[in-house]
Amino acid sequence: MGNTDEHDRPPVQAAAAPAAGSDASDRARIRGEQLRAAGAHGPLQWMAAGISAALTIGILAFLAWDGLTPDRPPDFEIRPGPIRRIGEAYQLPLYVRNRGDLGVAGVRIRAALLRDDSVVSHVDLTLDWLPGGSQRRVTAVFTRDPRRYRIGAAVRGYIEP
Amino acid sequence: MRGDGGSADGSVGDRRARRRQPRHPSARQLGIEYARGIGGGLFLGLPLLMTMEMWRTALIMPPWKLLLFLVVDFGALLILEYYSGFREEETFAEVAEDALVAFGIGVALSAVLLFVLGLVTPEMSAREALGKIGLQAIPASIGASVAMSQLGQRSAASQGKTREAGFWGSQAVALAGALVFGFNIAPTEEPMLLGLWMRWWHALILALLSLLQVHVLVYAVDFRGAHAIPRGRTWWEVFVQESVTSYAVAVLLAAYLLWTFGRIGAHTGAAETVHMVVALSFATSLGAAAGKLIL
Image (cartoon, rainbow over all chains, first blue to last red; front, top):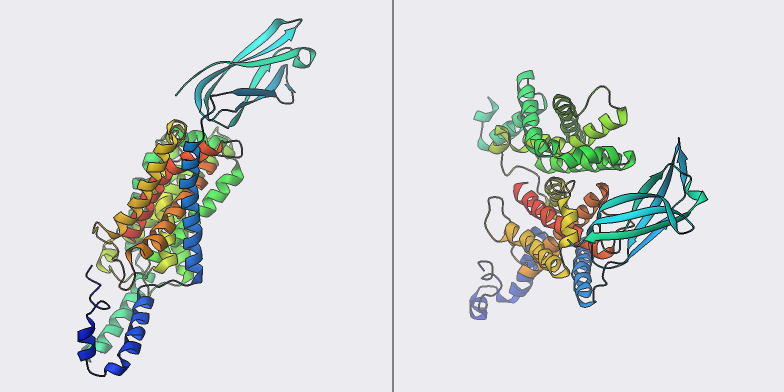
């Protein structure tokens, strides 16, 4: 608050000062110099500050909006990717997506090769973390060619963090 | 002696002597400066050298991401060397030379230490070994740069002769500080877990606290190196222009670090992304404030 005495000086004192006629323009000039010395801002700096304010307000607004919309519970979708044969093994990539809003941990996935609804072979996989709205890729490795079977994949359980 | 002639003459002579001296230091002076750089590299580099996620990240980070990271690191070194350099003494080439020396110390130091710790072995592929060395060189080189330019006797004696930062300079320095602080946390799993656990109101409060800390630490609590609100500018003007901008810089850097370490990407949910960025921004905004205070 030490910097208010300059321009908040009572008008009585200003009128009593010598050369009162040029006082206003003098003060404007002094204030201009002060502003320059204080690093007053050009248009580019205002632009940077504007973009920054927009980003900051954007984050705060997003979080508030997120808080106002109800959370969907974890809901999983598994899509198989293209099968690769590497040596004697067959690699089956699986894209696991959490369509809910809440993140989960320790997601257990079972991928199985089925024939006439009986399981011929299966692989169990664990995904450490699957945030809400996010997708991760896991790969199941089989010794049989998955293309000769029906592929079944499902989430068997998870931990709520 | 020219200095005997008068005070004005003397000061010119002094300045010339100062200008000549540091650009042609003796071998001993140079050795001491480099050793101080190695010390600084250890101060900043060692915690990350002993962070498991850093070793693993080096294996999975695509080479182009690492290359981009090294370019960003060199940019930060240029900023640090430029704003801690002495106004009358340095040209841009000399600033670049100093940054290159700090970078070299960072690479050499991390190569030696990774080898001694058994984390880099001759059997490793070049990609794995160079990946580890390159990634560890980033914090080590920043530590070396800060130690060589800021923590020496000579720089302590000539406080106040460093470049005036101005608006852009102050934001550049905030960026470098944010990188230093953010790097200590970004490779670990914690920001990711925080992103998973935090609810929207946690993140909202943390974002407001981060914004507050950037402003209060720099302008309000009288640290050494603290800034005064300049005459003729109001509190909110400085808050919006300087502090909000620095917070935005910290947020962007946090997002960049999380992306670099593979925590966020096209397949990460929006809410989780924002939560992770806000969590790491608490560290990067603290770094931004520290950078503005120190340099």
